[in-house]
View (spheres, one colour):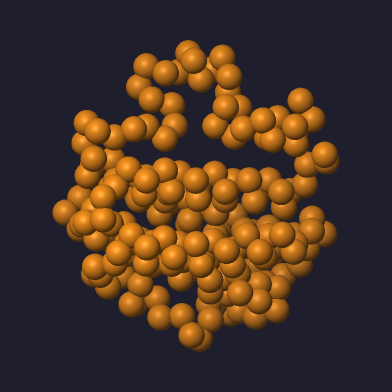
Length: 183
């Protein structure tokens, strides 16, 4: 299978989606709304990431990425959200993103989209979004790890695990990654 640039973006987004979900899977219901570990709760960060993805990737190629219906300020409100509500919100934002990525082709990467009226090449907009999303997923993982303490199960290379990882460096990306690279 030939590796595409759009496919690379999709793979990286899916990797961060999986990291966030790996953190969720270690939490109890109350921990999703806990604000003691760093200001924003995980639920708040999920609302923000999802709101951003929905706004940016709804009608991605044809309308401004900051939609008039988005209420960014409310995304940061303290909230007591159930696990089901939080996961539904997470899935909604990621669904919009992944559906859009499925529709893109590599030639689309040189097209222009706007975000808050500022033009960006599609590849630049994807890099900007990927960086923003990974930043907040990192916050989610950090907060979850703080909440779990010694019970935390590492989502990447655990302390003392570098040699094992180096012996199989594509394990976190799965066998499909090596196949896409032609290995």
